[in-house]
Image (cartoon, rainbow, N blue to C red; front, side, top):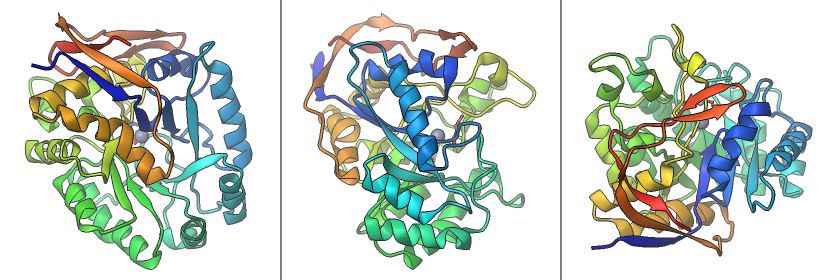
Length: 346
Ligand code: DOR
Ligand code: ZN
C-alpha cells in the first residue's frame, strides 16, 4: 500500500487570484503547493491590455509571501476591441502565456467578453502565427440553450468553427464538464487540450440541488449529471497528455455566495492536492497523478517542468478546513464530502 507520494511540483493552469485584500489572502493558499499558475484576467475592470497585465502582475508579486518561489503566468482578456499588436508585443516580451476568451455574459465579470466571434478573427489569426495559446470558457450564452447543454452547443457552434478557420491556433478548453468535451478533445489530433477542475471530479448536479440548495457547489460551467463526472474522472486519470489540472479555484465571500443571486465559483486552492491524491488513489491511478498535475500542462504550454517536488503522506482522516478568513469576509473552502486522507508534508 502506498502511503507517500512525491511529485514534481504541480502547476495550476486556471486560477482566479482576484485583487486587493482577497488576493493577499488567497495567494498563499496556491503558492504553498503550486509553482506556477495561469492567472485569470476577469477582474473588475478586466485585464485587457499589456499595460493592465504589467500592473496586475506587479500587484501579485507584491502580495507574495516573503521567500516564495511562484511564477504567475499572465493572460489577457479578449474583447472585440483587443489590439493584435498589443497582444503580440505582450507575448514577445514574455509577459503573457495565453489570451482568454469569455463569451459575453457567460460567467463572473464576463460582460466585456466576445459576442461576435468574427470581430476577434484578426487577433486569433495573429495568435496562431505567433503560437500564443487561447484559453476558452466554453459555454454559449443564448437564452434558448439550456444551461446544462451550453458546453456541448459551444463546441459545435463556436469552438469547432473557430478551430477550422484558424489552423495552428492552440486552444485550451478550460474546465470541461461533459463527456462531449472529453470526446471533442480526444478527437483532435493536435492543438487542443483541456483543463479539468478538482471540484468537477467530485460533484455532479445532484450535489448542488438534492436535499436543499448548496451554493458552495455552484460554479460555472455548472456540474452536470453523474455520467459526465465519470467521463471527466476517466480522462483525468487516463494518462492522456491532453488533459491537465486547472483548478478554477474562484474565491467569493460567503456574503456573495449565500445570496438570492449567488456568485459562481468553488474555492479549492487550499485542499486541491489532497483531494486529487484521493481521487487518483480511488481510480488506481496514482502513477498518473504527476502527469495530470505537473507534466502535461507544461508540455502543452511549451514550458519546462518544475525541478522541485512536493510530497504527500497518508494521514489520519481529517476534515477539510472550513473557511479562509480574509479582510473582505470569510471564504468557504470546497468540501469534497469526505475526510482528507492525505496531507502535503514537504
Ligand atoms: O465558477 C466560476 N467562477 N466559473 C467561472 O468561469 C468564473 C469564476 C469566477 O471568476 O468566479
Ligand atoms: Zn475560471
